[in-house]
Image (cartoon, rainbow, N blue to C red; front, side):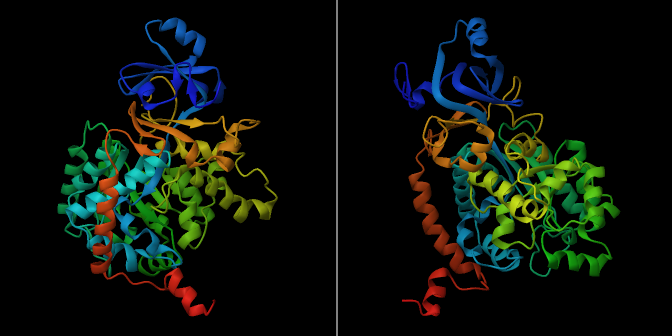
Length: 476
């Protein structure tokens, strides 16, 4: 039988909508690895049962099995670090040096209004879903709009979102987002955490742009509030040389050391990037239980270093994988995660395995869910977990002769193989297109607004665009 057909004809979205469903793919990616001949029952937005297909069919005789030959049912990916409202300026970051947030992202987001912020965020969410992400951690927009605008965009697109609220109370030279007194900022943080209690797809989080953007009181307060609410505080930490040096000049401590000194380091912290970490700071991360977002594409595009992720894994440091808004393609992200480790650390030490393939799927799914505070909810195919999952075509030329599926997914998997994306048990994407809404008007409006926003943003680039650079080079 062809891998894109079912017993009653070509596989289509109508096979995957409705109430309780018994899904019988060729294999299921369980926490123990891929299992052939397994099946899953989806009911009420969760997996109610997972196990051998024969047992599930016997124990659920009232359900008509949905046969999915040639497909792998696997957890949806988790983007542990995103900036949803930066999509209009994606290409503006290409070929630029570090700390572009001062010259590109702050002015760009500052030029957004409610409509453009909503469209930008929904555009990012659409790209993420197309790329196999079922959850994104939004690190807090600097746009002068209510966080509910971003929440609505994510929920309307159908993606699960860990929604950060910027809690800065020390205006930086170029970033005054969220500035206010510690009392006002913490009161707003408390309201934000309560606002989305019980929401299906939006999970509140707090955020501080960088440690220097908040007072000691606010850093301690956000840590306390998040810990009490079971949420995370997202902070860009030890990302660039300039930031490390500013912290040393101002506090006599590196950023992670400073967070520890003021009482803001703990399991509630989601440290974005953490690329420039000393052995002592790795110990701080390990001992505190803090989590890290390893963002390999961001390191390649505009970073100063690559986070020592394999060392973090060996030290027991919790971490997931993040795009930093670079591109919403999960398979390319896990490939970049392994590739960066091999180039920067593996070649120098003769480590040809660099996580043995499965590590990066783990960090892209359950590890990422744990890092963003949703480990008890999503990231795995198991009874009781949210039904956030992908159906991946493994019957084509890339993997039909598979010998090591986890490795092959990391190095050879691609977005085109994703047949379906489910979030909370609902079919959200079918062969790269959203289900239940027409994305074409969104794309058209995004193109119109992007030109307007970039024109009024006052973005400063250090290098010309590629077209201008070519013209200057004299190449004919």
